[in-house]
Image (tube, rainbow, N blue to C red; front, side, top):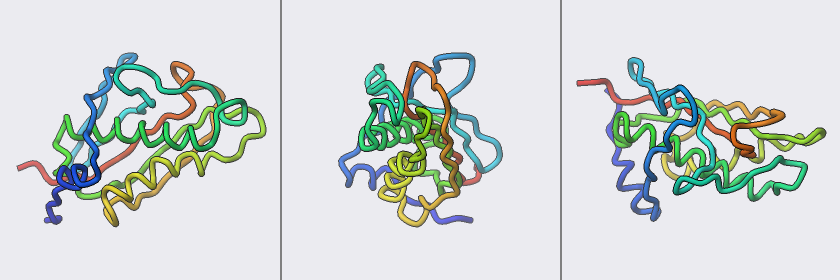
Length: 158
């Protein structure tokens, strides 16, 4: 059996409080468990019910602002995991997929999604090292510049 970690204490050490789960904007649920994996739906940079930033990379949104938005997205994904199974049941982060609203010619998607990946490393250490895709898209829901989803391996159900 995988080692149990106290990720809630780690978040507290970092001064981070998981937000409430962002209500779905369409017909889906925030996260689903199958076996020992939790898949989150794509999460937007919504904080306290409001999109924190809108626009596209390469057309007004800075790389640094988008990295911060990716961090907010992954924090929302972790909130969805926590609400479903509890954050302390996470064994490791398996995969992250980041979508970046990109103007023609923008090719910095990996750097933007680093905002999510670096945050996961800060929280989970080695257990936060994950496979990843960073995809440029024409548009995202609500005009968001970035959307992030993840897959987490979790402790077996008892």
